[in-house]
Each structure stands twice: as C-alpha cells, then as structure tokens.
Length: 197
Image (cartoon, rainbow, N blue to C red; front, side, top):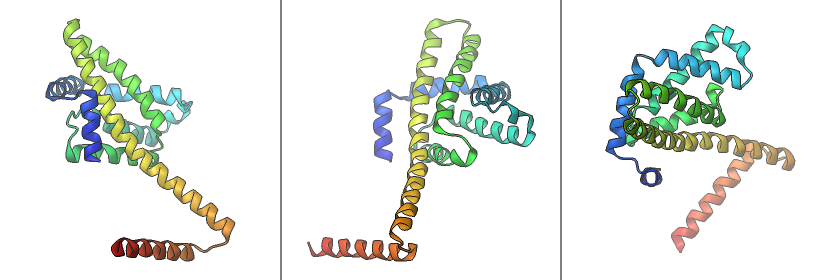
C-alpha cells in the first residue's frame, strides 16, 4: 500500500507547503469544530432522507463523533505511515458506522464549502492566500478519499466474497469444512509445484 499511496501523493502534488496550509486551516477550525460537525450531520441526514433520526440523541452523538473523526483526520495533514493506515482503517470501519463511501463524497462537498467560508473569513478576502488554501484542501481531500476508499473496498470485497461463497456452497451442497479443506489442499499443491520448479 505504501508504494501505491506514494504514487497517489506524487500525482496530486502533495508537499510540505500543503501540509502547512492544512495545519492553518485546522487551527482555524478548532474553535468552530462542533458547529461545523453539527452542520455536516444535519445536511447529511437531510440528503439521506434520515432527518427523523436526528431526534434520537444516541444516533446524533454517534454520527457527530464519526463526523468529527472524519473531519479532524482529514485536516491532520500528515498522510504518512501510521497516520495513513489510520485513515484507511477509518474507511474499513465505515460500514459499521452506517456510512457509505457515497456519504463520504457528499461530506467532502459539504465540508469544502463550509471550510471555504471559514478560510475566507480568516484571510480577509486575500484571493491568493485563499486560492492556495483551497488547492491544499483539494489535495488533502483527494488523498483522504484514496485512503478511505481503499479501506472501504477491502470490506466490501470481503463481504462480496462471503456472499459468493455462501451461494456456491448452497448450489453445490458442499459443507464449508469440505470447501476449506479443498482450498488448503490446492494451495499446498501450488506451493509444492513452486518449490519443485
């Protein structure tokens, strides 16, 4: 994954200047984080047609915690090593949090517009600085999406594989144990051939 993600960073042109811009944006957000998270939660619920759930305090707390983790992680700005793995793991956990990658795409658009307003207020309409900040934010959104999506795909592919296996077992009448024994025997045979070759 490291080599692939290094290629992604090179493609979007992520550098230390971007990391510094994102750190500034994060510092501006700190005092407004709860309001932005609340806004994102309301907008997401409305777009998903789940506005009735916003009266459930437990649901709202869970949603806000997830959105806060997503937004804070996005603006962490360090897309390296363990930090990159944490963002990928966030993508892996999306389904457990009742969010899809489509929700993340929607959140990106909502957050971008809200963060644009925040940056514009802080930069007093300095067009050049605002443009640089938004370019860095776009790069961070792209990198974050790549990490989250790779984690999300891992879970989705595993679920698809389980569903296909269940279907195969139902159609063939094989037991799961028999299937697993056949897979193990096949992989042992492939390993023997590789050693002999």
